[in-house]
Length: 100
Image (cartoon, rainbow, N blue to C red):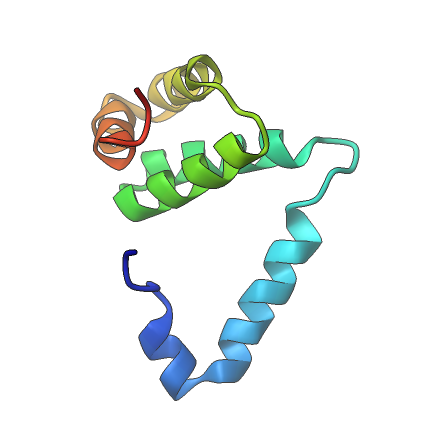
């Protein structure tokens, strides 16, 4: 299991990590938009911003909510059109060994 990317932050500032968890719960729930869709949108942002680990983690969470590899691919296409080819490279790296 990969190391928690917030492990150091948890040691030095547990309050900020709790704030992040609370914010995550506040944002990623089934409301007007499904939790799955929100996770896919967030994944697109991480792909656009070069966050390989974020792409991976969000894709895993979206897949637990029922996202298909086709939905993931389409979201990455949107990120590519809006931000450039780097989103595809980052998406590909983040999805390595995750999507068959």
